[in-house]
Length: 357
Image (tube, rainbow, N blue to C red; front, side, top):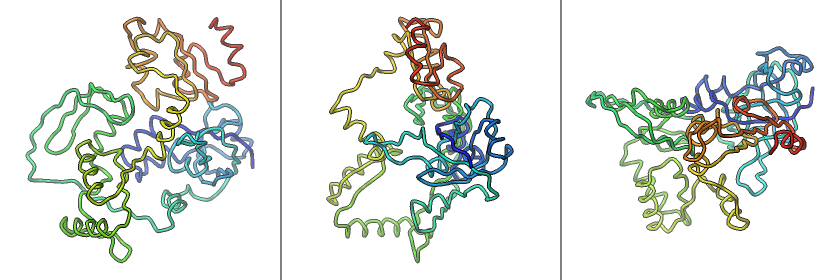
């Protein structure tokens, strides 16, 4: 057994397969992995492609070992997802989100299979988990084809608004101008969704009529003492308006997923303030950009082109008019576009002096 520091984060394939489907084999193949330096693989005594058990103070998980020459010695990487979530420190320190980085871990060889998603879900919910997705198919739908311009992608905060989406019948057939993740999101929007009403009977979900589902939901709401209407983050503004009205009628309260994400962030910034800039300000004025512990080329693929490193601004001509610094303990696609990569924070000041900043 060997000791390492675990770093997690987004990868392009993790994001792309996430949008194709969390329960697909592709998603597991891209996320249930641990990138390890080749020399560290020798120390552990495993070959690339073998399974390893990753243990932290917060949990353990079995994933596939992947040889990564670019990984720093003693630092391992697991893409964000079910498997990373099982072993990271859940403490948010009041920020709303764990850091997902710098977690001490132990790694050992194992003959156990890669941990299935369902076993990981049991960690958070004791009831057996099952899913029933229905196919979206309407043969009576006219198979007309048309293209919609200036479509907004809602995958990330870049909110790219220059997409062209072609629709054939009731399905999206092609997407232009989106990144790989945005394309996957739009092309696979109909997958892993529930198109038919279901209610729980004898502990299992069964398909039912819309009337029965609505009557059951209404009964639950009417009998609730203090209902919470939760979610909304992937819902349209029009649906939210109806939800607000429903909450008023039943005397309930509204809450959304920001309660375990950026809700505490907003409360904190209200008390202490925060230095920030708009994407437009960065694009038009920034002549020095620092990416700290992040990898936007994978996490937000068009960010560097539309708003930051490569973007042509009003007062900055583009990449040649900017200095790019990346602070990260592991090399990434973003470090490849940097003028300076800093692996250790304590050496940052010295390197900045050499960089004449």
